[in-house]
Length: 113
Image (cartoon, rainbow, N blue to C red; front, side):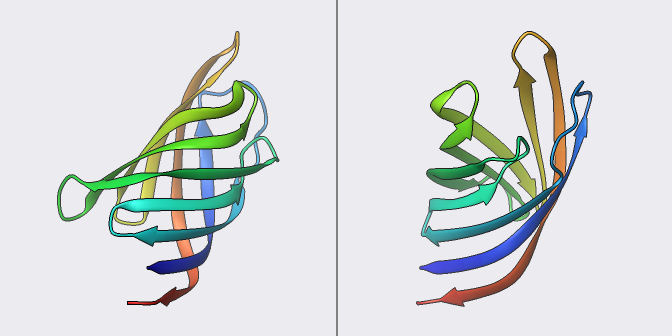
């Protein structure tokens, strides 16, 4: 099992509103299971649980359920990662949506294997 404390920086492209772009985060992973928490784009805490699937050596798809957003107490989400960069889409109710582009910066980790 690996535990990581980190920071994600994001850019919201095509959105109407102003969003938080700095996301302190923590995560834990075991084989392909992932879970963690972060300070999200709408300035609320979010917690997630799901799985990580390696598509190629450097390309990973994360599919999770996540809390902390306006669409419901828990919603499905997906994030595509290329090395330390990530890409996802995000909708705004009644306002369309856009693309979120970001980078994950690990600040420290503990591996218990």
